[in-house]
Length: 326
Image (cartoon, rainbow, N blue to C red; front, side):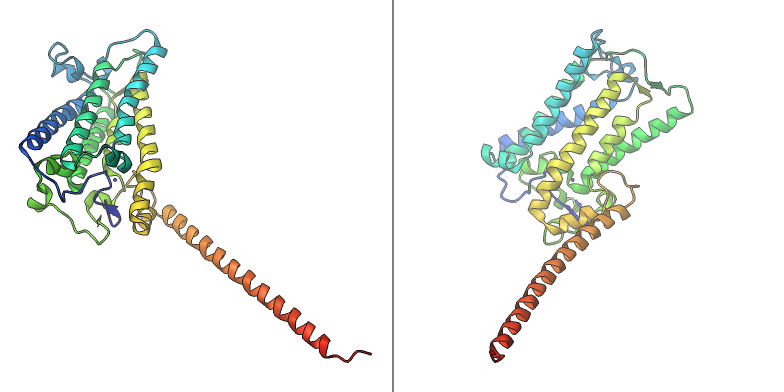
């Protein structure tokens, strides 16, 4: 979640001010980043059929393709297991990103962010390792067809869009390196964008969509040359989580923190799809403003009407008193 409206901390990126670096935080943040980087590359490969030809299951059992996950003949058990694994990632990922949780735990950013990345990475590895297939017959199989390179192209584009979006935001703070090192690496490399007084940044991907990292993840989730039932379950669960977390947690939090500038940003930039018509969002924002204006005018009109009626009644009473009684 940064642009003419996107705050620099939109993806829950802590600021790098007042960070105390130490040998311990330096080692921890580098180790957590390395673990995440390797696991994430393998995770992307896990979503791409055929990785087992590159990484044999005997060498890295949790790094095979999602389609090569162990098959469970009990579909209901597999469904429940996979749903639990996604929840194991989703719940901590959103819960520990909330400001009130950070304040309650009380760790400084130099510890909190790298450990948050460690937890996220470990839960990703868990659902790679324990994911279960439950239907061998694919819903669609595009291998060997003219659609295969098209789907593969979408997948690669989604991955590159996701990865580059982290740099459009602040890659090094997002993954805890700046906090652990006590150094604003983005600024040192000259990668910072122009920010306004509310910390909002107009930058690349964020001028297209409000949540480009999530856009990239949605694209790679659905760009499958082979769509099995378990892969479809993965795509549906991750999509549901992303939409819920963004709409019910992230955006409301940022609107409370930033106020009208962020609301105006959301009114003009699509949340996920760069090609979604922006006019509907503008109409919605304009409609809200018109309703508010109409409400104010109605209240003013009713107040004026009340004053006018009171004035007329007062005049009638005064005149009646002045008329001689017969």
